[in-house]
Length: 525
Image 1 (spheres, rainbow, N blue to C red):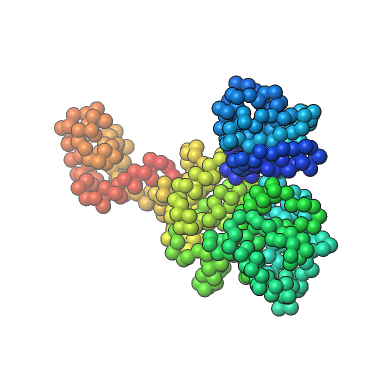
Image 2 (image 1 turned 30 degrees about the vertical axis):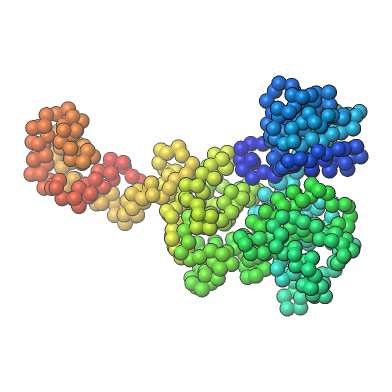
């Protein structure tokens, strides 16, 4: 009877049960149940045994004996209880939902039943996360949900084409095949009936799950509409054919709808509308094989993105730089759950992410922070591009992310995210060294000064370096070098005469600083 536990990463996107789901489960097990459903809300992550005097948390439901309940329970707010035996409900504050089980119910069996319910829904939630990155996410999500709802399910789009119906059951509507597309769809006769039915027309504006009466089909249908912003995209239907629809199904269907909206937005509608895989598009786009601007704009249109939105590119790798396909599927699903305005995909043995920052008015820092737990627990490293204001520059943005990741790995930094802005200087010097050796990228005057020091055992090279680092502050430089100001002036004059360095020239100062960086940091060739 181990208590269910969830790590912080799981809590970022986690299906939380309400008491109605638990009450339904007890009723299915032939329990005599009374449910006081006041203030019932989806907040539950597990079950605990009630102990008098111990602090209670709203994320747990507490199992207790009816004898435990007294007037002190009025002090509890927003806490859920399951009581074995009859209780005086006036002792419970109205903010606390209560399930009352009949007297004589086995206490341990009740505890184990609740644990099994939480485990079942947690497993279902995991399967939904994995399905997000699968080849057929809608089918996978409905297959994972059939046992939960106990009835056949299907999804259709705005034109009544069937997006998914993984299991047909006798008594369901028989789909027609569209001769133009070869796709399954709701029969035209039924579509015409719907369009003339005021009850159906009223359902099109619903934002939460609801029931469609049995008048049209002879059985009730639990449904939830799918939305992309304010635009209706279709709906999920649960046909009440095999078992009675439970009140708790409403909450589960709402959560399923949110997951499917992610899948539709990123994958399924593109398969159906354009006949292309979005992963393939992004891979070809980053490779440079897609050059037709109109084709790129067409994809943007179906993504509901604009060319001049703000974009961010990310590249993720494991410490071993080997993306395991099973773990990658879970990782891709988690990323798209955390960043619903982005698309994650495998690219050249790494995970690539393109994020639209304008869609939810995000900042780069917010997006990166949302992946912190995944990165640390998955031993991942990430490179992040600068913010990009033109989708046509996304391939170059991914080059930035890749360069930041490569340079960050070679640095002594222990962080998990490397931003291109922090490695801009290293990148510029690295590109310069690809054609010219480091010593030829340095100021000839500085090399002359270094040679003079080597031959004459002087310290003019170091003096010039400190003087520039301290922004030509005479007092601070003299203090740092442990010399008098007059000595510093003498050395600066020697530097001018020996190497011809003009510290008043801003361009020359920049060249010298870069040269010092190349020589002192010993960057790889």
